[in-house]
Length: 402
Image (cartoon, rainbow, N blue to C red; front, top):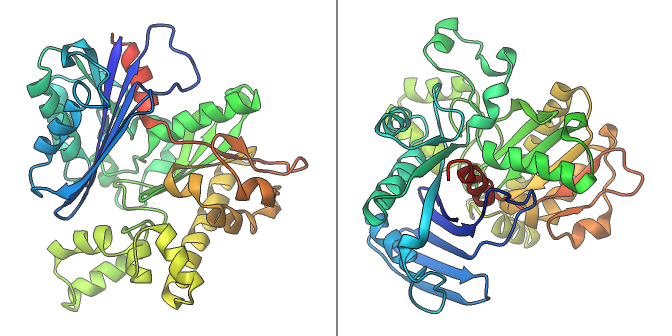
């Protein structure tokens, strides 16, 4: 069965094609085909590759508000050009979508219906950067492949096991009754990484206490006890928690009321400031990309160095918090763009976590390629670098609906 996965974001679109049967392996397999679109203002970068090693890349101007047309062209590379792996799109049996926020009603993967769409739309305002993009991906498949089933897999779903003390905010209890609570995000990858860690260590996941660090443009941690999420850093929206690429993470809410009250910012501008002008970009003034921040810091840029130091400080604080929620720590996982590719971040974070029993092997860390263990042989806590595999995890969920 051929499964098309769409991972739709506000500034990127990732797609992958897998061929899986009911006996799909536990370990990830290479997709038949992968495509990625990135939008940088009017600039559009398209990259496509297949499992035969063929690759196609185009850097061009694009209509800013016409992402669906671009995605349609992306999918055409499945059947035409050097990267083609299908004779017809009709060979695709099912489509899976990453949906960031499922709200209070949607947790488990579900077949997309009119009612499911309404529920996704009803919480789109909570995750405006993501849910609308997911809905547009569903609408696109409706047009291109109207007869195939579509499956929605939710980033919030893994965190449905959060205990009340971890998900209820300390505001009026009526907030919780109205659905204002901590949902958590990046759950698809946090869940995958926890199970992958157990595979790599040849341990039963029920015996492991894991802190998973998803560090990319968006960043979050999850405390995973016996395979279940019991704490996480993101909350009602993907804005809470760690410092991120352009997102502030947690700030004193009194700052926001102060800025509004003194007339320094309009309420409608808060979202833009907190989501797009903060984080690594806001502090460094250089970039939201950790690689560029590190390069600037190495050249003596003090604000870039400060941005890195704040990122590590917040990361260390939250790792300690997750370990406290777990009661002890067996495994620390680094995943996603920064987690997989920045030995500097991993080293800086782990250097202050020796009190937890973490001992990093400097050579293993410097040369690490996922999936691997970078702790010393004597480290009480295993430190793993694991490749994010959201597309694979979504494809495996789709098999159950095939």
